[in-house]
Image (cartoon, rainbow, N blue to C red; front, side, top):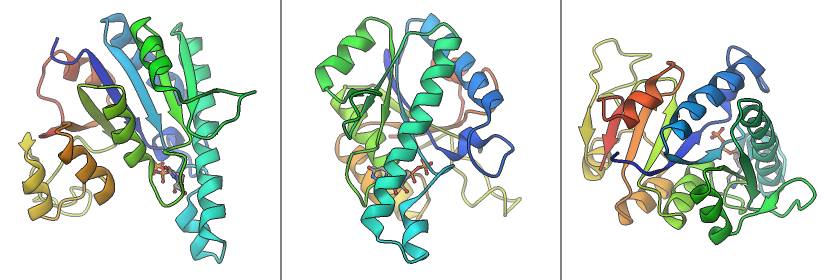
Length: 234
Ligand code: UDP
């Protein structure tokens, strides 16, 4: 198998399903089933979860709130999502640990790199909550950072579109999809994959990113079986 250890990035919004806010238990259960299929294949799975379905620091700041305070709320939102995802994974029969970048010892383990790697080696899914633990960062940056730290082979960014397009396919019907694209090309063409901090961290560390549609059942397994799913940035 090409990928032995993966870092799956799920946005908070992905957990909303068809809702406007919060967590859709049905969507969560579907994700857990998809994750189960890949752990059964022997792939080691780490997950970074976002918080945009609950709170974003920027949104708070634009409404007059102190940005750092808002980012703290956003980071806590990712922990809420992490707990929900852990629960869904355990319901699906996957042993799962949640590690957070900000210490909430009664609720989750603190992030300890060696411990995270040990969990993965033992076949446990590790969910990283709390982003990077710092304001002014995003969970995309946390995903790249954690992926590098645990020496993941790839970042799989699960979205609702099936890859990177020449333009936004939801707005421009003539947009075409890339199967493969370089980091430089993404930057030169001004395409949006992740925020710049996250993207350049991935580029500098030669960590490939695959953007794919996580909402189509079976896609994650197909991708890991080597099928051409999504767009690979390398
Ligand atoms: N956040 C933060 N530092 C981090 C990661 C996240 O302060 O390292 C905060 C920030 O306010 C962000 C919110 O948590 O808006 C939720 O994360 P993000 O927007 O990345 O979630 P997603 O878009 O993936 O749902």
